[in-house]
Amino acid sequence: MSRKFTAGKLAGMIFCGLALICTVVLIFMSGYYSGQMRTINKFLTAVERNDFNSYKTCFSKADAEDLTEADIEAARHIADVLEDTEDFRADASFKGREDLGDGRYSVTFDVVVYNDSEKETLKDVSRVLVREGGKWKIETRL
Image 1 (cartoon, rainbow, N blue to C red):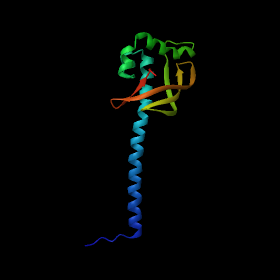
Image 2 (cartoon, rainbow, N blue to C red):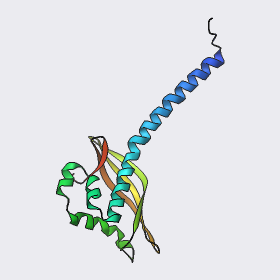
Image 3 (cartoon, helix red, strand yellow):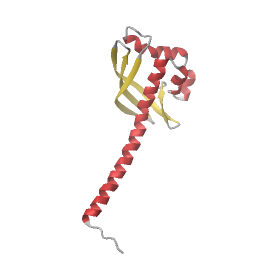
Image 4 (tube, helix red, strand yellow):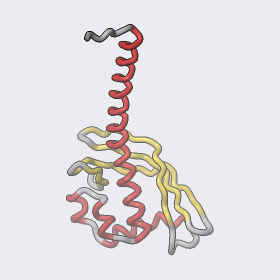
């Protein structure tokens, strides 16, 4: 038996093939870049919880070696926009990224800092991120 390919079947196969290729590319790109915001969210969660070990994992190995408890305390000052700075939460929303070259990206985002009674937004916060061991890490050295 021989298969007959009509113009409609051929067009359908081409469309499905292109759709599959586009889907794979979009999934890869989404996973690659969404990891940057996962790192930022992990950083903010560590700051909220005052968890120094989790805080250090957000940074490149070279930078993490130089971090101290004073660094996480300094990062906790994002809550200073609130009157009650004891218990706060922080959420980041992606704004954009800029390719700095050499696998480095400047990621810009807004941070909403809030507690039970207040809410403030810090606009256009930027961090430089690099890939290290397949994961995005915050870079502090320039």
